[in-house]
Length: 180
Image (cartoon, rainbow, N blue to C red; front, side):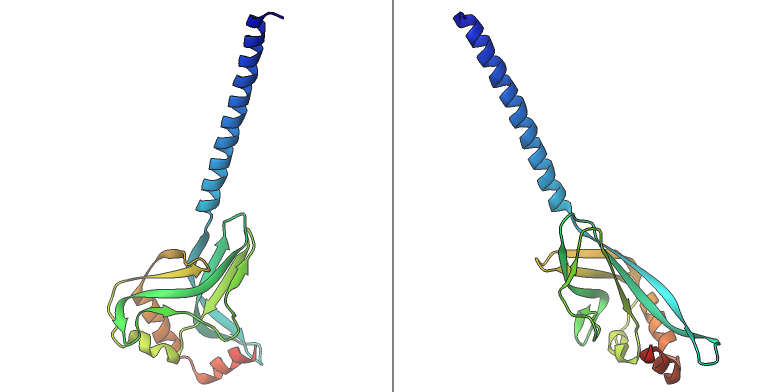
């Protein structure tokens, strides 16, 4: 083989190696960007609870805030807290943690897994509305690396209406809920 042929073969092999390494680099960059964009999807909806009584008559129960959290990542992620940001200050500030007795944080969510957090505003939430002012609220979650994920915007009046409705519910109905 002459030197010219050796140079052409060397150039072809070098070109092939350069193309493969460029494709690998682009693939790694794309995977890194996709994993950085991985996130929780937070969605809030309001539902009326219907309870079956002992005589099988439906009873209208409290309105419930349902917070759906979906892990849109390809890795397990952890929810550290669920919070609400109010458009006004209360005696405790304008950020409120939404906790339940039977929920222990952090909560692990596997890829594409959904966690539904139900929250009922009852008379213990009166402090949230002491300095009530109309505005926009957002529910947000914080993961274990302190990244925040926000929900759709909800008017503060929606939460006030839920609270006003729920405090009018008789204690017997609340007792039925605790039994279930």
